[in-house]
Amino acid sequence: MATNHIKKKRVPVHGVLLLDKQVGVSSNDALIKAKWLLSALKAGHTGTLDPFATGLLPLCFGEATKFAQDLLDADKTYETVVHLGITTNTGDTEGEAIETKPVDVTREQIDVVLAQFRGDILQVPPMYSALKRDGKPLYEYARAGITLEREARPVTIHLLEFVDYQAPFLTLRVQCSKGTYIRALGEDIGAALGCGAHLNALRRIQVGDLFIDRAITIEQLTATEEGARSALLAPVDALLTSFPALYLSEELAKRFLHGQRLALGKENVVIPAQEGRVRVYRDADKALLGTGLMQEYSILAPERLISTNQNPPG
Image 1 (cartoon, rainbow, N blue to C red):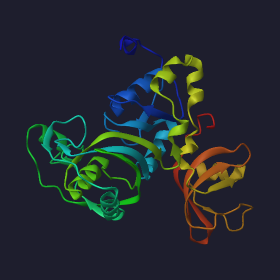
Image 2 (image 1 turned 90 degrees about the horizontal axis):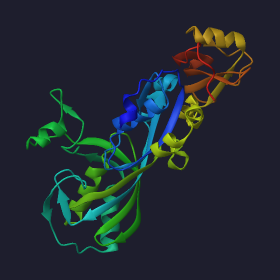
Image 3 (image 1 turned 135 degrees about the horizontal axis):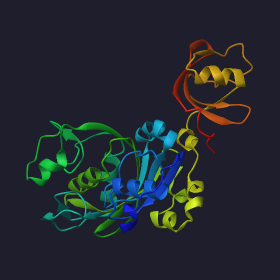
């Protein structure tokens, strides 16, 4: 697009854009476009969506990039349409059909097969994936016609819900752990039903505690007046809502931002009941300071800190 060649002054932008990625767009292209539209200095995404997939793609800007890993590790929820009877070389609509079989399956057979894929399972990653072998992504070998042995990896399918079946299209909702390939799941379900399958559609509707209903498209971002675009971002701590909040006094906040471990047992601080990761705020203005680790004996160890030369998020 011609506008991308216009030189723009980059500015510090901090927050999370919940993008509803459209079909046919790569995650990287979506990130580059959003970064340009926001004139942002620093940006990163929290795990990619295949070009043929749509839905929630959280994009991190500025200080939010420090916490992108938390979303990479988060559970994801998808809605997918599995096309039974046709197997493709990519496991989705972008590939070529390599096998076609008649589809003669009942709802009862589908229920039995779905039950086999719930909980902790072992999944062989697809050849068309970004996993690397000898420094080269698997999809490069696949494009050269080479199939490599891949080790099955443990993943967890928290939810595998039947939504609809209009032969040959089976619609499912899946909530899964990081590292799960829905394309591979669709192929494995097709194989278990004896007819093969590929994904006809894939839409991500949730990442961690972030939901698609708050997301906007790149077209909506483009149509928003330039000065108002950054207001569409969720605050940095939108990435951290699964952690308990901890509020510190001005003095304790200063020490925390200097990287000091704090003994909070005798301080006037409400300490979370469980040890583990917390999001830390300055009590006076509710500004996010970063994340920390609550340890034994009410010790707070700083983890990732927000730069103090930026405006408080939110």
